[in-house]
Length: 587
Image (tube, helix red, strand yellow):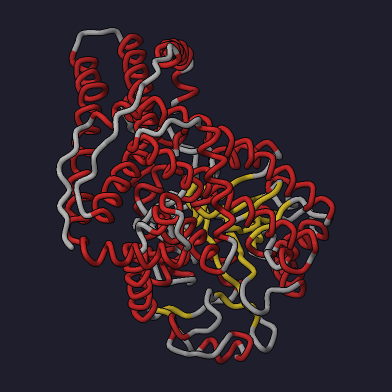
């Protein structure tokens, strides 16, 4: 049966604002405290196992020790609690706001937590994982704030993009997940509103979508367009026009800076609040649609008695005072808070990135000519004990030979080429980079072991390049070995995910994947006297973000683009300096 939803007035949403903000304040504070305590518990468990952190390079610890298994169990339980408070409670609250039921935020949260006992099964765990990982990735379905910025890491997406088969399979998988997500969009509504089992809620959701999918997409499109229009008008009113007037009026440089900071902080605050209310508003809209499609008639909003509290006005006054005081402080320390130039260095990925053939002398030299500070290369051992430069487990992608380096002699490897360039040895790459840039040598592949570490150190010392090289690896045990045995060598740990006291790991550099490189983590690493690399930063937006951060260097395939971005950053206006800093703090 096809049902068309009548246009709803904004009254239910406006009246819901106080309750939504109280809900967000309560749940986000509770979840933040919970994550903090969870982090402390994990640190205690890691310490009992003789560790300070776990990284992507040694994740098997989680499955081989009782501490790791306990961490996984606690983390899974915490995920369910997070889903309950950040999503399920929002559904229950939104239903109450629309149906006129009065209930405290505390009771709403208790109901949400008690509802999670139905998810302790295979299907329930699957739903939780979909909410955590898949929904934010394909942007279909409801997700939680913990993972709303989740994306496929660059080092994976680049491989997918370069391999047609992987790309096709990825599109197929994403399409399957998209269909699954749309078909089950109302599964949580059925469970939490109508007390259905997961199976029955899933069947009901599929029926609703099958009968009403055209109207569902229409209603969602209209809602999103209206929301974007409202946000655009707010942005124009509180940011665009005030900043335009500030730029045009004949003001002193100090006053212009101060007003610019004030208006941007005011705008950032308003959009932060907007971010807190938009998802609950969308949830309310989805519940209107759920009732309409399920009952076969337009949903009727039930008005409820609104209790007026002075808290809102008091909070508004406090926010305004805080923005004014922060503006004064920032304006006094403008150049320190909003630095004009960037000191972040550029490291070419796999020799020279896209400047030349992968992992070749020619590529390295091209990156140096473009101004790169360093070059990251990958070494593997041949069958006869030599060290050549190659990233993959074999030469199929770069040279059309599916043999691995450990299956070949140096002479056999020499017969291959990458885009017409000879595959070099470690010695040749070091010679090419000597006196020009820092060479970051990644111990790679099946032959990455202590013998490789010892041999690499020996070769580097023979070239007298101890101060011009950094030995890096995904294997923490290997890096710890080098750092302990050869303290005169610089070392770096590559990691695309970690938890615990990452800054205390035994190395000189920590190379973080974009997703995990938060400002807080960068600061904690610097506090321990270590340096931070971000990898692999290829997109313009990401490059700008991390060039404006406190990271020490970026590893990138797009060296020329990064160098152009540095020039652009160093010639920014005051307005752009402030915007970039605010974006860095809020991301």
